[in-house]
Length: 205
View (cartoon, rainbow, N blue to C red):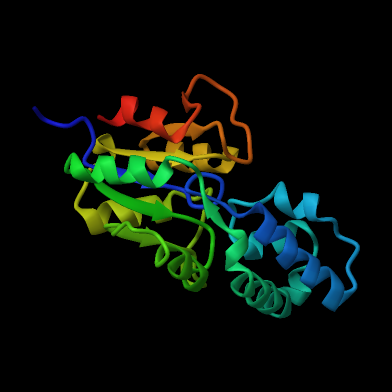
């Protein structure tokens, strides 16, 4: 029987892993070093977008390189505060066993993403992270690059995210979307929704 999808893409933070405590600790380090009064909740509401975009919204672009450096050092030092959501790794492995390619499309830096993925017992077919030469979410570019690398059509691809920016990215890339209700954000509209990681399987398999 032909599978409905050939490629299943996942956001990382809020979908595969719960990294809120790590992010809060990292932002606290930024606040301390630069004596900022910008609250964590303001930063957290914008996650899912590239870091430079978040800094622009928070009017901190003039400190971008310095803030990014401190944030990533603090984050790397406390990877112990990051944990996979219950059942998510098992769900991904089951999707892979069915013969479906899997990937990650995230706004987290490549270095930190790879550090986290190394701790998972999963071999992804593609991992897309932002860089200075490419546009990140909500632009469709990272998803479209994943399609090219995996030789897959939009009609055969689905993205699982947890923020409105993820839904917008999938829509602009012309692929289907599942909203992870266990994640950090909300997404309005008539979309597929999964209450738990295991619920993803009923849409995929």
